[in-house]
Length: 313
Image (cartoon, rainbow, N blue to C red; front, side):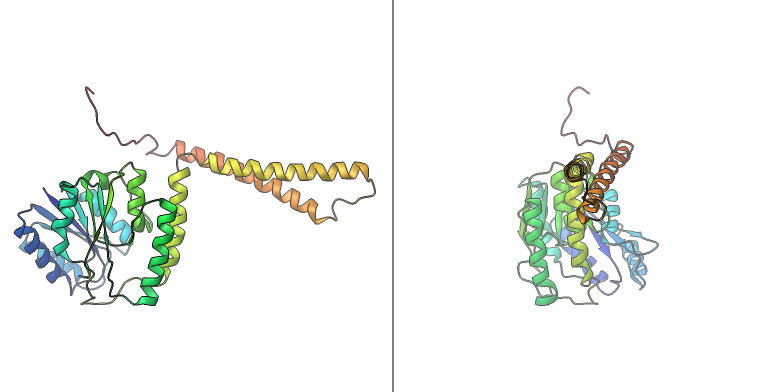
């Protein structure tokens, strides 16, 4: 199969028939074998009934329905598990992503050799203050933190080599950082393409201001996991040792001062309690590192590695 198109959705009954007809027209005109995976993330409208109808008319359209709303990351992760196409393309269901971009994205993967291509909505129709400005700030921080030079990390329109989506796990709110996950899985050829951003035709946005706060928190999480996820003791042990030594040296200084000045009180000095607290914090960090190492060593995926090629095995 040439192509798998993964579409997470929530309450998009109005846009689905038009979107699916548009996708079918584009891929048929370009003679691509395909499947469309519609992931219903706990919709409360008639989205699932619409998906049933579309799938009954064209078996290339398939559906997965969640019992409740789990979020875009969970929907994408399930879609990636089910995808069979050589190239996997993700897009939103609100018709702000244009299916006409599909052939060019497919070509960039199959002919230009990219592992992943991210869309860039250079010209947007969103509200400037509530989306554009926070988005620019978010993307600037993500670029500086990850070293991946993309202008729009959060664009829903992306294309992947199938091998990429099978080697990453998208969880929490990590759909914003799939390029980072791909890079840390060993896929280095990540490209970008300017894509059309269409005005919303149906419904309203499902995302509020909280996504920007969550986005920055998740960025910290993913940067930490990428660097220390398999070796947590290197982080907790380093800072634990540092804090403990600072507290220990401070305590020794107080003891020596007491020897030379027997009249000096220790417990009535704030420095004494600061030194004691610093030692306790250092010990806690060090013990946290030990516990984290035990968790990592017993994790099911601890010995899962991406093998590029094998000969005679």
